[in-house]
Image (cartoon, rainbow, N blue to C red; front, side, top):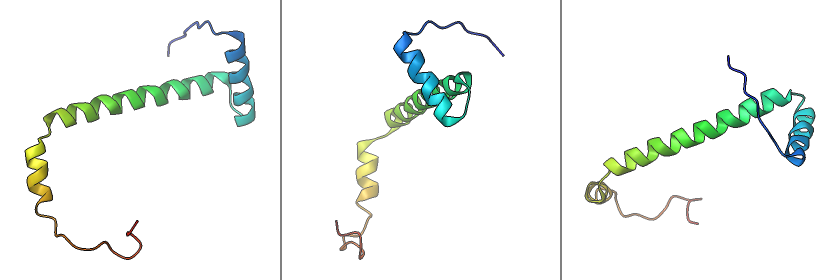
Length: 78
């Protein structure tokens, strides 16, 4: 495990401390979780962009052409 020194504005540090207290976790745990969530979101975005780049509008249209044209099921009208 690594140690990182981080400079934060006082207002942000105070906000983090209050949130951690309200969640009954340490500041370290809150910050670690927040960073993990951000890293996960960015990795997901990269993955989806890579998959989208492999996609084809022509293939999409051919697949969608196979879908029957019918009214929506009850409850799905909106």
